Length: 412
Image (tube, rainbow, N blue to C red; front, side, top):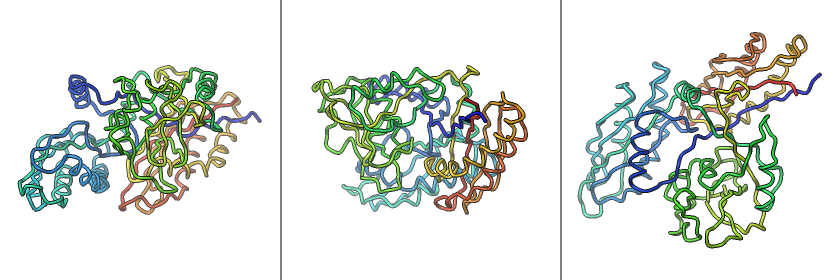
């Protein structure tokens, strides 16, 4: 039997720039408000721009808002049960009294068009207990929340011309020069045009650390020309708290002890290069003679039939690393679905996009083929049934999780 190449869960990230000059920020805000862009795991997040008027520090307010993001996600998921394709941006004004209590929380603009979700979000923000104001004054805050939908994101993915794909991590650590050469000579997933990402792109692989995520406060950025060793100042601006075993700051499921090279050289230390260390999502530097792992990137045209868009979209309270690991445990059974029909048709190949829902208990309550290029109902239905047999961990907060997961089958 021909060897089967079974591709699972290639994480994709769309290109965004670092925080830049004020004029560029205005352009970015205008662009973001006009469309919902697929970016990864979260269904709710704070925007690049938010305004505060009062005596509480903006960072303090954002820290307290971030603590209730799981509750806001739950508001959204309850709405999706009734209206599966809702998505949008909800902008709130809320007033924090000198005692730290929120006296008023109201929706001032929305593209969600779901009153239930909008009211739930406003109510949850209204329950936050903030620190007491420094000068006993009230604080007025304007805050936006972006909610993304698996179905909406899949459509956006189809409409975009190119997407950035990540390779598997290199099997071993290597020097910076070896990492550059490794990527330039890499042939993986049927693609050969790989390269080592610069620090701006590498930061797109960070999740859960607002400081070092793409567009975060860490000043290290090739686009803006901040590549000197001073760019990681002030101290603490380019890292977060250390992550525990089994948790991830990496959108590509890199373990906490993994560090990755970027192609960006320090402008004041040409023998050193920037990279990311995932135990604290730190953007830091290392001598080029030192050893980090490499993850390569390449851009592909989604509209070319020869390059299927192998993009997984997750909406809910389980991270992609957990979901991916459980799907991989069923890889042999899923492969058998393909092998059985491959014996009848040696040229059988294609992509099957499965949409499934993980219930609050971790069981798969629904699994169906959303789209396919395979053209073989036996394989397609078999894959969907195998997914339905998987028992996932119970999602956080009793929420449900919606997943669009691609499976690519081809012979080699």
